Structure formats: C-alpha cells, structure tokens
Image (cartoon, rainbow, N blue to C red):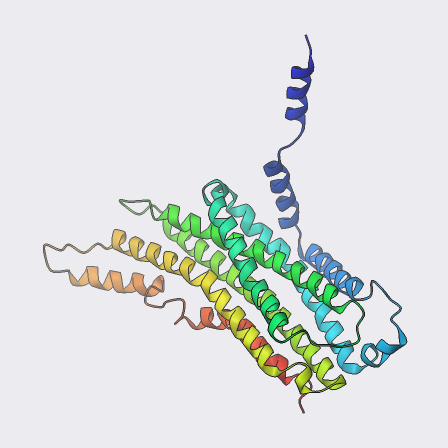
Length: 324
C-alpha cells in the first residue's frame, strides 16, 4: 500500500542529507594527488585572471595602467595567490575529513570562529575605505573585482579556521582521558600538533599571499600616480593586523595542546606530593617535557612565531617591490 506519506518517506531515504553530501565532497577533494593539486592551482589562476578581465577589452583611458610593467607583476601575483588558495583546498579537506567526528560537538564554536574571523578580516577593509578611501587607478570595476577575489581568499581561510576549531575540539576530548596512558595517546598528541601547525601555515600562506599581491598593487598604483595614492603605512598596518588575527586564532588552540601535553607527562611520570621525587622520575619528566615541547609557548616557538608573522613579513616584502 502506497500513499503520499510513503512516497515522501521513500524520497527522503533516496535523497542524501547535506552532511553526507559534504563528506563525499571532502573525500573527493582530499583524494586529489599532486596532479589534482596542480589542476586546482590552474583553476585558481584562471579564475583570478577571468575576474580581472571579465569586462575586457578595457577602455583606452585604462591602457596606461593595464599595459605597464608594475600592473603585469600585480596580475601575475594576483593569479598566483588565487592559485595558491585553490591548491591548499585538498590539504584543508584532509584535515576536515580526519576530524569530521568532532563536528557535532564543535559546530557552534566553528560557526562562532568563522563569523569572528570574517568580521576581523573584513573590518579593516571597510574602516580603511571609510577613513582613507580606496586607491584610485584606471582599472574598470576595480572595487568589485578586488572584493570578489578577497571573498574567495576569506572563504578558504574560513575553511582552515574551521579545521583549527575541530582540532581544538579533538584536543579537548583527549584531555578527558585519565588513568594510565594508552599506547596510541602520544602518537595522537603528535598528530594533533602536526595538524595544528599545518593549519597555521595554511592560514599564514593565505593571508601572506594576499598581502604580497596587495604590495604589488601598491607598486603599480604608486608608479602611475604617487606615494600619497597608496601610503605604505596602510600596507604595514594591514599586515600587522592580519598577523594579530592569526595569533588570536592559533594561540588558544596551542595553549590547549600544551595543556594536553602536560597532562600526558603527569600521567606517565606523576609526582607524589607526599614524598620527594625520585631522580629517575625527574629525569623522565624532563625528557617528556623536551619531547613534547612543553616549555615553549606559541609566542616563544620560533616556528610558530614565523608562521604567525607571515602576513606582516609579506607586507614588508611588498614594500620592497619596485625598490632598487
């Protein structure tokens, strides 16, 4: 016996839910090998080029700008940044797929982090446009084109931010374990640390590439007009600001990771408060502290500091473009 209710139930069963479709999409994306990454990079480069030249041919008044050497350098770096963003997607997908089981518990945090990062990244653009105005150069539709490319970069950065949230949730879950340390817990700790550093590097690369391309755009604008058209302070301020955004996103997660490392050390080599610590115990704790990098915070770690400061470093490099 069939009816409208049975038909609806059958259609609901046949129609995959959004979570299943998203997981299949991530699986396909994560399965991309070196050739697949190259294809994604090519797609990104072509997309960046298509956005800039969507209204080609340009009017004669724009030729002085669009046929200059500095403009060509900016175009190459712009296409390169979009290519990089697309090439990073499979790596981000692998992390999201590896920690997809944490989505149910971390979805609210992921949404909150995404909204916060979106506002933090877009806020200086809106405020800067209101206070200083945008640099003027004769590229048709420049405001819309730059906005579209910026939103693409922000979207990729948000995927990486969600990955950091899921990894942080996995760290929190690992902190709930007590008693004797299982054989796989140390391996899990190092896996979490690797995933966290990889996502930090991705965030730094995304924002750093954007800043470097902006530096090339500044050089093209200054070559056409003058320093006042695009002050160097704007580029430096934006680079420093984005480094702070990366730090805000990463340091709390790294602090949780250090907490997990200390918990593992204390469970493997506990100290008995009722009696003096044995030398063997102290030596074991010292070795574990060194192995797990527990004495080095996110700000003090050379590797983490370099990755956090990538946007600021890119802004400094951007100011060197065109200097002789």
